Length: 363
Image (cartoon, rainbow, N blue to C red):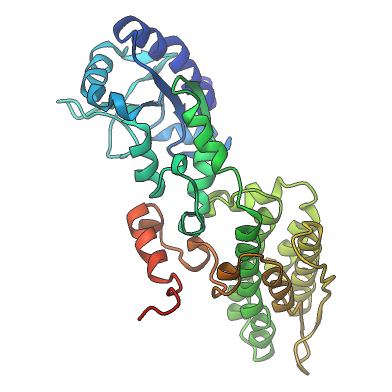
């Protein structure tokens, strides 16, 4: 069977199957439809390999709060009316992927979920963007989630544009939050950039490479943030970064840093990547330009960017006094790297809330 990109398949499934069923059986129902709930297809990165599990016609339907009482009716209609296959793909799935829809007595389920829109936002992100997106919301939301809900596709928005407006509200950070997150990213770099050289100096090549790999990950995430792209999770981080305009010199530098060469080549590659991304930071005009170039780390014979000065410039440019005084931890996925936590909005918000600065006079 010829591969069809998942979003193309989902759009056709809505237009050719779901919309006609709803017009016929629920003609007065106002709804929105799209694919925003996860999967490589939301980033346009799915391939034929993606079809080996839980693949097929899928979509999400959303109703307004006033129609939440009709959810059982709509689900029953879909259960009865959906075809067994569409364009040669089965419409029911085996397994336990929670993104998919209703389980039938045989244990298979179709790939169409039906939920109330505000409830879905709260389950997915921990808040409803229709009520506004505050600093705490931004910092408690992993960028993978933001990539999903602002990526993907909307096929129909019959809720007065509410689904589209929610996505638009999450398009990108406000400038002060962006400064804070970038400053946190550069702080992470400052904390580790001198370690690969020190490891290499004492003959620990493996340790030097491990630290360099961590820096490479942080630098790719920084590069995406600098170019206003939500960093995805690790599977697609390199692919997404490499597609950025002007990424080629950074990719080449990181390839040298992570390659089989000796410490001198590793250092040269890291310096190339660090200096390029420092230049990208100046180009955002979010802070006074630093024009950072590599320098020796104290009197030691290896080079660093001294990335703390880039973080300091960004922090100094934050206009919100409360945000400017926060510790430079950034967004939750800058200090946490655990799939089970990052994919559960309840866990994420509890953790992020525990690190929230105390109000003046509290305690």
